[in-house]
Image (tube, rainbow, N blue to C red; front, side, top):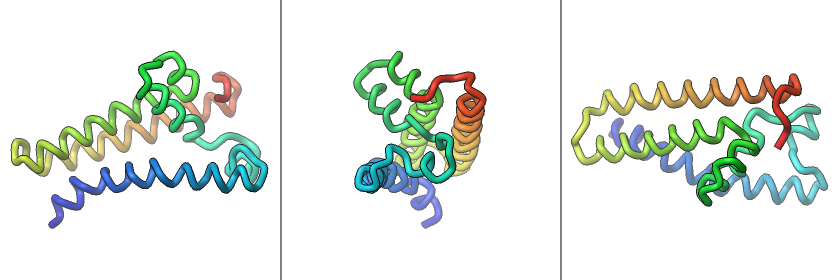
Length: 129
């Protein structure tokens, strides 16, 4: 049971990330603001532009993906690696412990890259997307 949660958990998280930002966009459009976090706090959220970055990557536009949010490239690599390792665990080709190590490593890398890009944007070292 535990390994199934860790293996299929990222799939459910990805599904939420795909559908939930759409709801946020609808809410922000209804309120007349582009970003709810920015409207409330006054500066962009750490993940600002990640969905647009992933969309640009899906279309093969690496330059646009970098402009939207450089951390989006890291997010895409981590999501792909988590999916691959989860699949290999389900097929019994790698041990479950590999999935746990990879998940912790990937989550840490994503959090750090989002934090670095966010700090650079708040300090006006990187342009806003």
